[in-house]
Length: 342
Image (cartoon, rainbow, N blue to C red; front, side, top):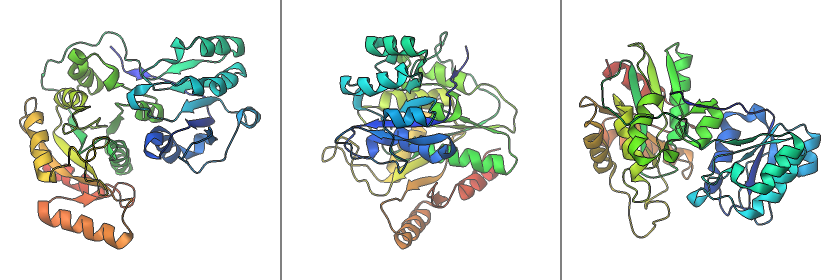
């Protein structure tokens, strides 16, 4: 069994449709941030309140710019693909532009898109389709080192943290791979495992396949999904945690968030040490030696002085490196991992 592999033709057009906030355009934001050199522009429909800061392109302008792939840059609730998105995507496919998406509803299940792609010779690339042959997890010890990003909530920076840590390792000459587990990460890396599309019984096995045996000095930096604290998405988080068998976990958090996303006023985010206790108890089912290696915080809601004070307070309270993966980088967490994971 192999990982999901995709090849996207550049340049990209990021389609963020009519989303009502920046958060639901996180796929577009991730690709624009980590692969800016490949992005020609964005396409927005009336009512869209998200903005990736890229040139605005309509269908004609995208074709004139030589766009190779239009990527659906929306992480829609429930992974839906609304009918209102289909006409512009079909127009692009009819002109020979590939369409890539990570929604649970498949592009190939939309007859209009299938007909348009056939007419234009374009590809429909469904990213959120697991490979065949996934086995159930076994929990057997694997060689190599693994660090998994875990979250206090959804959309708190697990992918950004993993990519930043992987970059830090590579810049130091350390053998490392970024292991993508979601649609955006797979489109950035070109391969991975769409873990939330795997049948529940096989999630831990898929995570084991994603991070196989490796050299003892090799690191797999694994992108987390969901949160063990979130009633809606904890199932995929637990399977990924068990199958990853991490030697260390990095807790990812959003400094501007007090309640779980989509459950505001119902489920508050607990203190971070309580959150990590839940994670470590579960992680140690398959790796009893798993440790907490630091806190990676999205501090976009804070100014520079507030960021410094916030991270310093956390570091003083928990005695661990506390960073913002974008504003500061993952140097301190990389140092901690290299010192404490043997």
